[in-house]
Length: 186
Image (cartoon, rainbow, N blue to C red; front, side, top):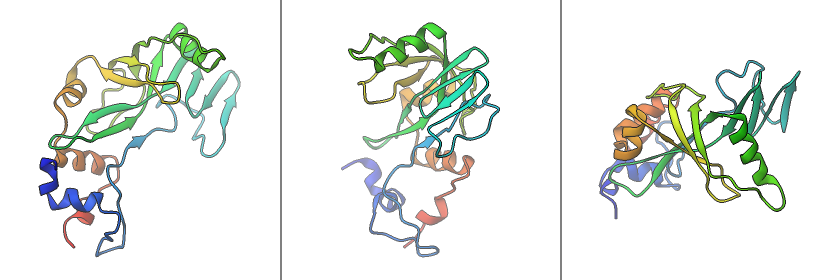
């Protein structure tokens, strides 16, 4: 049992069988926030298309090339204080061409070596902003996107100290997903 299990809002967020009394909405736990493309991508959303190519620019679900710049879609985990769960952003990281190509090499058979490296945050994150923040991109297993860890600032503080549940709810609201009213009462 986690400390947050004592918070009725937390229990409601994790109760798949519960319907919100005002609208019938149901939740099944934390909601991660992903991004379709880096903020600088000028060619619109990818939507359901496997990739978008405009001239030399290309966007897939995990990779992006834009005007000679290179991006990898990652996860940026943030622990939630009082629980053993993590919320994740799904932002894009701008990398060097060498790091991008090393990551691309992991798709080969046999896979290449990818050790991660420095990157810059390519999305403005609600609650943090920080586009262009210095990050460390770290590999995970071959089937999972790499993880990002902030070098300093409020984002690093959140990754090392965690977010309170109220701060997470505020972050959702800032991202346009205010679920607080749906968790208030049965």
